Image (cartoon, rainbow, N blue to C red):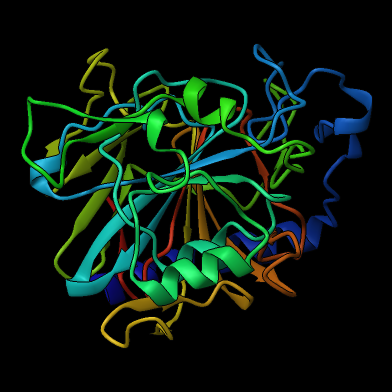
Length: 330
């Protein structure tokens, strides 16, 4: 299924590339929203900011097994990463900056992948339940600011509505209150189109995408205004508000994994280097590539013409499946 869908996408986009190249199309510079000339624009969404922008990004490790669903706060996050963990399962890193979620969770333990994924956010706060000794040592040696349950215990609480370990929660307001002095705001991670401007000419219609991590499956389906998240075939909503989890953008960043140095049974995402990527926005998909020189460097996203991919201003989910583990919905 994955191979047929990939072949279809490459064929369609190959034709589009030939057409576009013959027209010598150049992406207009006015389609980009330059952060330096757009005061009060949130760096992780490209939207006009509501909350304070001077605070650091806050990354919260969120559970993703059936006993943890529905979660609280995923729909509020500026940015969500989904990574593979042991057993072919996946977990989320919800990154907050321009918005809040009180409460947020359930919160689970750290993995060494998290340190690599978050290394280009300028020392974000990192909220998690714990980890094995090697993971904790790696967190301590990283540029991340540890606001875990061990370091900021007063910011966490257990819910009687669920069983441990799927019942640990916090509040973004409490976690930001635990930030060390001098913690800095994150840089922009994406480039954005001006609202209402056309998509890139390499964009083709797409109904959605199905992604597999082995024993965990996640899908996004275009609903006319966002990409509604489905997990194991069930539509996902926030546990408190009931709102659909439907970000404006979805990035499928095909990522290789290696055994973690903290536990050989745990996969560790390799996020420096390069690889293929799909970019979903406004009912369309753009095929392209991602590249990241080092863990601390920004990830560069380009289409098949080598032009920067410009996302729709709004929330973004970045899926990190192994190569070949995603297929387009027809």
